[in-house]
Image 1 (tube, rainbow, N blue to C red):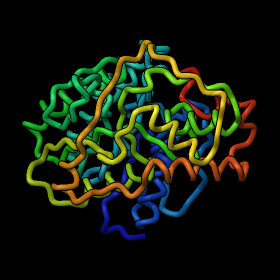
Image 2 (cartoon, helix red, strand yellow):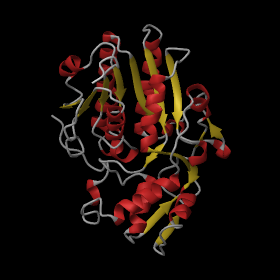
Image 3 (cartoon, rainbow, N blue to C red):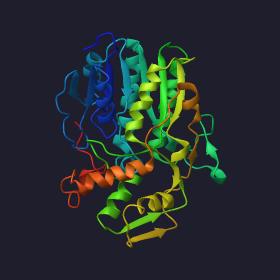
Length: 331
């Protein structure tokens, strides 16, 4: 174990993205502390060298205080992730995504950690006129409880950064896709591939609306670049994704149908989700040299191959198992 490297503390380390990020840093010989409440009833991570896993509610700040150490790199992934589940559990969501996250931030500032990474979302942009590209300087227009909570934390971090000279980086992630040990099939690309593969009826709403997409493995690479590159200021915000992976839902369907056909797809013009945004990711490329490796086509083929190999057990019957649909009771 290389103790010269700072500890990596991942809060939300057993989730869809967290498991990928954890393995990424373990493979680079970092010592990783993974903290997760397993709120979606997912499995506890397997024991690995250089990995300490803590099953812990993030409300337990006294216990977290003993785990978070000075000079560590803290990656804040914890939260109720996604628009449907935050709407379903609105009161709990506010506590987890705002109140408890702020407590953790304050603890990190007090400890003077090496670097604090807060994972936000491109959903903050909400809706743009005339399909114009938005960047980090664009006006935020959140339409969901999830995005509104993320923006409140972003503003809190910006305010705190003025009085604390520690590295704070906000990463606004595009919509994720791809394979993870804690799989989610409630994400657009993943969901569409599954439904078409299983020959289920698929209703696609607002086919002309735009979203940016990014493979879950590329998120780990982006975090690594953020903590490795020399940044000019202590406080930075970056969109994470690729300009090439901005697509409409209709285009995603077309890409999937190159590999699997379906006559059981219907297109519906209206839904309750009005989000529509194309995102420019050139800042992170220019300042940090980060370029995503994986295309949407790669992710589609990856998911199809995994399902052909029956990587996911009881995929038809256990639909709610693979996604952020319900949570267990929080003590």
